[in-house]
Length: 201
Image 1 (cartoon, one colour):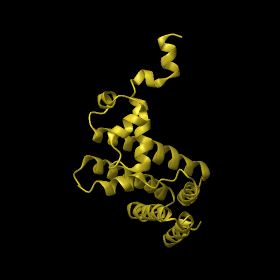
Image 2: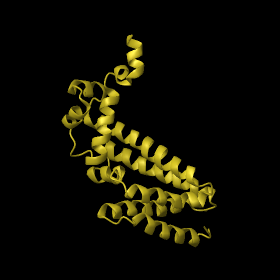
Image 3: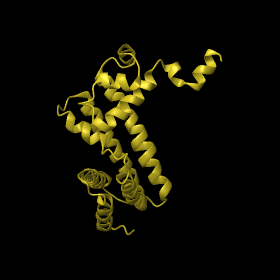
């Protein structure tokens, strides 16, 4: 097998261990948070040298920022956004479908809570780059909600997105407490929010 063939079958050979490190960090940070998980744990999980990690990510902060970027891509855009659009065509029903997706998520062993909320709580300095990135991640979720709200005919989409986001975040926290029906309860409240704004579903 030629070098090019080996690289085609194993992307890690192309990136020099970056992807392996990123996958390990994603798994560990998603479950254990970014504050308590150190680079030694990431290196051990990725089976790479510490020098390899620092070659691609000069600091732990750089690694965490890369993790947040990937989390947004995989969780916000590919998982939540695409699944909601796949399930419903009506914008208002897409908003409610968020809680259907959450309900299924809450029942799985993979449910780990909201990474962005966890990282926000871990970094209290408002000037911290990781905190700023997390705030931007949460704002991008509200951007998605504003788009759905506008398509549903809601006028004040910013206020609406913040209301809906509270329902989403609240349901996640409640599910972490052990309320497996948290998403269903949030969906019921969501119906009331929509009705208050003149939208029947």
